[in-house]
Amino acid sequence: MSNNTKTITVEQVGSPIRRPVEQRATLVGLGLNKIGRQSTLEDTPAVRGMIQKVRHLVRVVEA
Image (cartoon, rainbow, N blue to C red; front, side):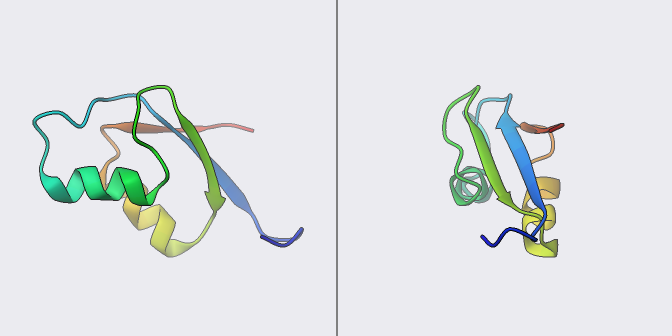
């Protein structure tokens, strides 16, 4: 990531147990796999869409 790109930090707050495989895969794609884990990613439309798909399992951390 270059210095001028915006980033977004997400934290996993919900368990993927009893969730569809697609939602589990989305969490892994976001770099999350355990409750409380945080991941900082580029703020792109693709990442925003992934967050939207699992919005009930993650929260956006304010920097």
